[in-house]
Image 1 (cartoon, rainbow, N blue to C red):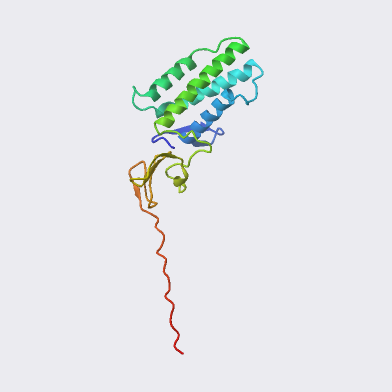
Image 2 (spheres, rainbow, N blue to C red):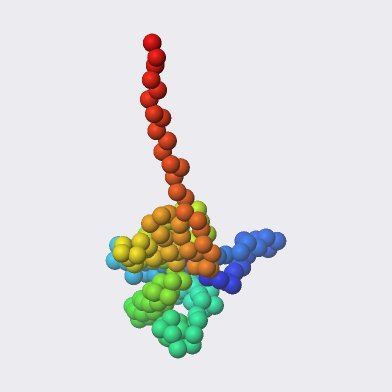
Length: 191
């Protein structure tokens, strides 16, 4: 999902700047935490590898910051805890710095989970299409209410059984009803 009002800029070259969407920031943070926390991920071989991942996680935390809403929310608390840990220096020594890196990755993962709970990020693999994508109906169902005929999708869209939907910004998308089937009556042939 995209985060309203969040456009981040990174430099591709000195002369060219391209916007980075909140979606790509979340995907990059999720990928980095997976590389650190996954047991099947390649083993870090030296202090520089550990430091590189620490810097990547700190960068993700900086980019995820504008997503925080109310100051007393679980997301704000998770982000504050992650930033507090990120503000401390990584300890010297390979094993101690790897433990620090793992703790930082767990904190960033907690931020991503809280963003997902708040509807600001998708944690599914593959990532659900955003609400503005024409394939928005392919998003994972978070809540289904068959009695009332609607489902809440991961991207914030409320999808109705008649194929209509309500977008997160309040716009209504009319149903895509199929055309009625016209059956031709057999005609009698007069002989």
